[in-house]
View 1 (cartoon, rainbow, N blue to C red):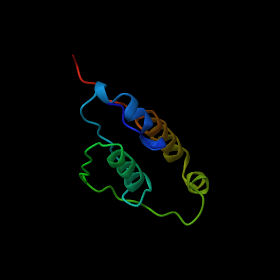
View 2: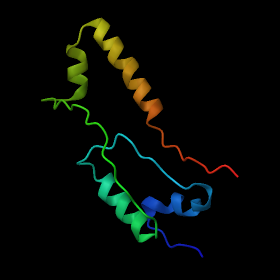
View 3: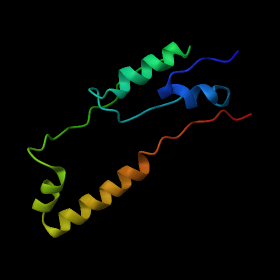
View 4: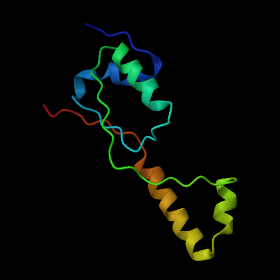
Length: 100
């Protein structure tokens, strides 16, 4: 039976037979992703469970992130750039596929 899927969940619906669990990590609690994707998946017939993990501290910057980076010394700017590159690489969504 083919499920009708809303746009946010269409890839998951199309490949539902290829996995049995999806873990989405590091989504901020106030992000629209949580309720939006959860509801789209429920509507498509998926069971959704939200498990909150350790809370990471969040620093609210008064201005633009670029201004904050510019205020750092050379060593800390370099470290921030390296960490940002790691976050971008690690943030790519991955599907865990069921092994046949």
